[in-house]
Amino acid sequence: MLDDTTRLAVGFLVGLADEDTSARVRARVGLPQDEAPGLDRRRIRRAWGWSPVPSSVALWVLEQDDPELNVLAWPRLGQNAGLRRAVARGVPFGPGRTEPVPVDRSLREQEPDVPESYVRLGLVGSLRAADSLTRARAAGSMVLTRDDWETVTAADSEQPLPGYTRWVLSVRPDCPPALRAQFGSHARFTHRVREAGVLDGPAEYATAHRPAVRVLEVLAMGRLMFPHRVHDAEDALRPLVRKHLGGREEAWAVLAQIAQTFHGTAPELVVTAGALA
Image (cartoon, rainbow, N blue to C red; front, top):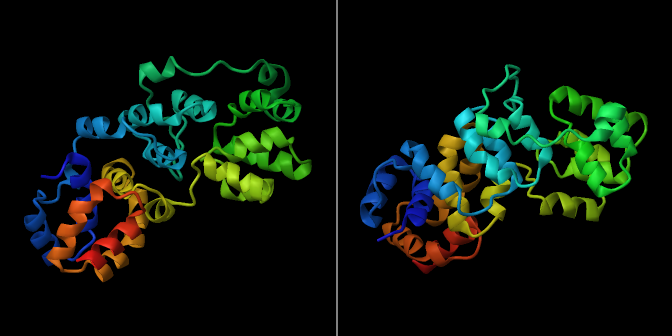
């Protein structure tokens, strides 16, 4: 019998097969029909809470501008004071949205303190005055809205911001890609961004992160938690699923057997299961 994580992971991949294959495979490996889209939030809360995810995944959840989902995403924001402050103030993250998001009282009460340098110098002034990583993080935590990011972009274009400031802003998953590119593309800089869990998009998460079973579990939950984003991950994996597994029930049975202990990426899992079968 498959555990919950493996069932979600395999179910996500099965959902990428054609309708006839999906029905036959679910019956063969013991999967309920169409489980992932109907996941309730209590179950998501249990599965979401046990393991870290890249910071960009948490941002995709915030883009739903759903107060209940924001509560689930909050622990995944780590020490990112800027994102925490934005959520606590009801800043919308969804494209084109401007209305404030209702905020759970428990989150509103956890907003980080406003840095003294911001009070004295304002946003750009405090960013320019940051002469240490700690001060840069404090000043950067006041960059919240799209207007704030535009202000930062203009200020850096006029005169480059200090290195510490560029660092702390670039590793924010909500930093506009154009501004991150403006900050620089040195190898160490790129490494810091990658280590911070900033992704180009769901396709990168689906194809390059590991272990496969955990990635696929998160993507299965993503059909409820970030449905506007999960389609890119599905599009990246669908051709591999149909090429290496297709309608071969034996290949799907192998995938279900090895998924739980497989340490590679999702594409590696699919190719391996197909080859073993």
